[in-house]
Length: 364
Image (cartoon, rainbow, N blue to C red; front, top):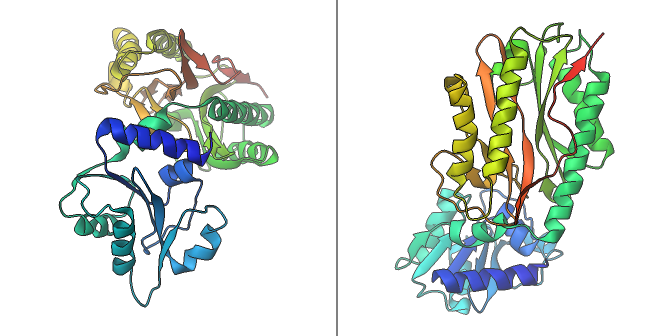
């Protein structure tokens, strides 16, 4: 889908929601909507969209480079003069000064947001959930294809790490192998969590110099960026036989994944998926050890709507892409997380990864 088509879709959404003006900052929303990726710093750089016009408040330092990415009009400003006059001129040109309903990018710097709200004192302010955010949640066929390719890169990176993994290696050495695989595939590594033994009980463990040893369970959560989209997968490895009690806990997490996959259907509220996974784990007696949400959306960002939480009222729809990743974390023992990225189809979720969720046994 081109930027023009996305602008058309946004304007249709703005009409449906009664939104007069949308203002975006450098980041995921601006890149997705307009294909523009300016440098983000203390200088206000804003994209402004109304029903009849779209353009940029653009720092003069960014203008020449950003012009290669868009032909929309710029209202440039220099450091010596500040952005206020250029912003007033932009709003006047768009007829936006009397806007009653303003949508701000939730990732915008607070001082930049204040600049906009000060210029539009009569506008009621909200964020992008019902406009740009709603559009980004439903992936196009082209976006699905990119995400599927990215999932293949993550599968290969995971397999490369498993192939090289041996007792005596450090978490950091294993992570480096996964990152090298991503790089060989032309992807930029975004995160490589490797948590062995008791470190696996920390859901967002900071990969370090802990040595893998026989009897360890190893949590591997990796992802990278390619084609403007992200990958994310978590699988388990066992060094030798793994720790005592591992098989039982893995089986519970596997049942939780299966229950969440079964619950994920168009028209279902997101919390129902979380309820399904959490119910399995709680019934098995491990409820206190499932300490995070069941999932998050994935697209141009690793974490984006929809969020699969215990309280989410978001209604799931075809084309939404999100993770299903329940986990059980046993303090001072081990942790287990199994993660699938899915796209929601008419009849349920399609898993993007091709890897089984069984723990891979590493001998040696």
